[in-house]
Image 1 (cartoon, rainbow, N blue to C red):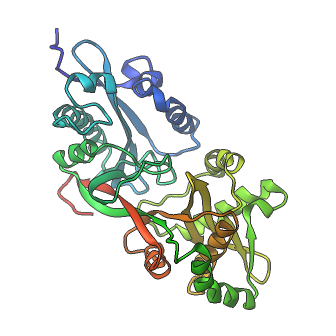
Image 2 (image 1 turned 60 degrees about the horizontal axis):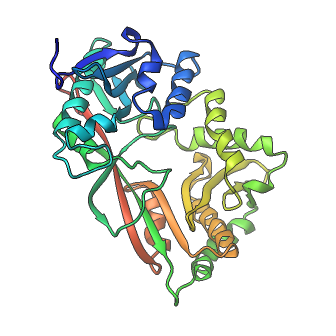
Image 3 (image 1 turned 90 degrees about the vertical axis):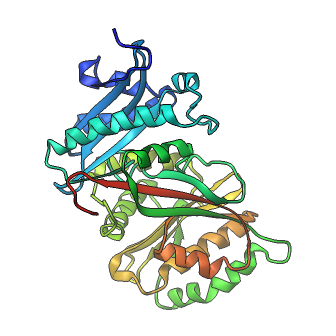
Length: 368
């Protein structure tokens, strides 16, 4: 008989199937079931294995999935979840930083080891994570060290405790890409419309060049919106790290609920002179913030300052709605969106900044 603290790492198939994997994290069961169903039906390609950590009492205390990545030498790990109830017994509650992290590191490390062994057996040289099968879905870890200011966690951002990042680090993983979200609140002497006026020339130049800007909620019929977003996204992000296209069924399953649920009046499309949609800014209101989540412009239409023009239209609509807080969300350090942050948000008061990382590890002595 195993001791209470002894871990057994097994596969979901050796228990009662994927339900045993999903049940580790009941709070996010619907999300996990959604992704696993896309894998099971072949909508998301690539072989995957689902590992579950079981303690000496037979309780499932953690889970982690391994899947083949966008190229034959790359693997991904994701859908990490740890059972809060069992973490509390070791002073390491999932969302609590008061414990020393030893239990989180033990469970996560054991799961990572099993995933790495499985990936190595399939010829993988490098592994990255956490990535939930694809960068179209949840990925990255929160890095709470050095965060500026105090603020709440949002549902659209990674919100893991620092112990998760430390556990990956203890297992030999290191950051390969860094990201951040910056939250602003305008001052009494510098209102949103001032930002809009500052950016107006670039929008007017685009209009004079024949570009047309349209809010998402003005697209008719509404069913046309998702195929438009898909076509732009697949072109605009094709050179991103770990990018791999997903089938239309998966894209629609991901975005249709968002389009139906969110007020998308802040989001904007831009059309070229021939009426073809060439870019968009995806933005929405959350807790009084205008959240700029994604900016995408087709590669052939870059260098025309359309990203700035799209942000200007978004902020103009936010000003009309009376919003005085803004967030640039999940921006990769060094890309054009970060440049837009620095260029167009010089005057508003910076309230706080959240940091995130994507980590990786060489399995066969090779680098990124």
